[in-house]
Length: 105
Length: 295
Image 1: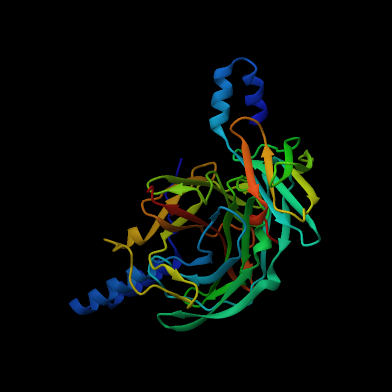
Image 2: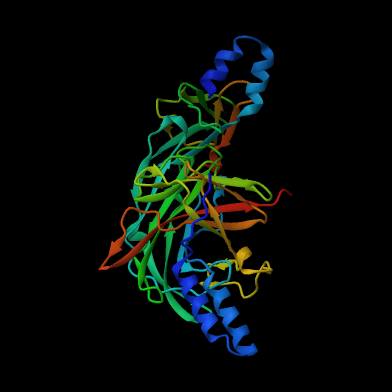
C-alpha cells in the first residue's frame, strides 16, 4: 500500500499530504537484558520500516548510536550507561521519540 | 444467495418436540416454552482476555470457558485441551511466527450458575507481546460430548490481539481444520459498526454456512472465575439471544455490532471431520470480536 502511495506521491504534494495522514509511524524498544536494546518500527498500514533512520542520543543531544532499520524493521544497539533517548525518524510527521527510561525488559 | 437451511440445531428440534408433548396444561405449556427457549442457546468456546487492542507490550491473562455467553450459562465441563498457540506477525517486515502456548494452560474451576465446572486459564508474560503487530491466539479444546444430542462438539476458537496499532496477520488463515478469517480487524470495532468474516473448512470457503452470533451478556470476571450476576441486555425473544445467520455463497458473513463489549461468532458443523469415538462430531469455528463505544 505504502509503495503504491509513494509512487503516486511523485505526482504532486497534495498526495504526499494525504499519505502523511493515512498512516502513522510506530516504534517500540525493549531491553534485551544483555546490555543491548532492540527497537522495532512499523506503520499503522503494515508497511515496512526497513531503511528508516534511527538515532540514539544522550541528554545533551550527542549521538551515541545511529543506523537504519534492518530488513526485519529492527535496530539493536548497546545500551548506554547514561540517560538516553531514541528517535525513529521516518520523515516529516513520522518521528517517534522514546525515552530510555521507558525502555524495559 | 443465502438459502434457508431446514436443518435447525438438533437439540432445539428435539426440545421443541418434547415441549409440545408436555404441553397438556397451561402451566405445563409455559414450562415447556421456557425449555424450548433454553434449547435455542448456543455453545461457545470462550477465549477471553480483557483487552485486545494494546498500546504496548503487557502481560496477558486468558480464560477458556465453554458456555452460553448470551445467557451466562449453562457452562460445560471441559476436557484436556488439544492445543493453544499464537501466530504473530508485525507488518510487512516479518513472516508469521507460530508459538506453542499449551504449557501455559492451567486448569481452573469456573463458578457457574450450576456449580463449579472445569475450565482453563493462561497467563503470558509481558515479553510474549513485546513485538508490535497482530497476535492470532488459537484455542482447540477437546471434543465435548453433548449428551442430550449424543454427539461431540469441538470449537476452534480465535481471539486476535494487536500491539501498537501495527497490523500483521489478522486477515490470514492460521491453517485450522475450520476457522473464521476476519475481513475486519476483530480488535478495532466501534459500537454500531459491522464485523465481516469468511468461514473456511480445510482452507476453502463454506458456502451458506450456518452461523450463530451471541453477545457476551454477562461480563466475565476473570479474577474470581465467574460471569457477572446481572445481564447487560434483556432479550425480547429467543431469536435475539442467539442470532442465527447464514454466510453467502462465498462463505462471507456480516454481523452488526449493536453494543460495546464482546461478540462471539460461531460457524456450526463446518469442519471436515464428522465423527469422533463412533459418534457424530460437529467441528465449529469461533471468533471473538471486541467492540467499544466512541467516547
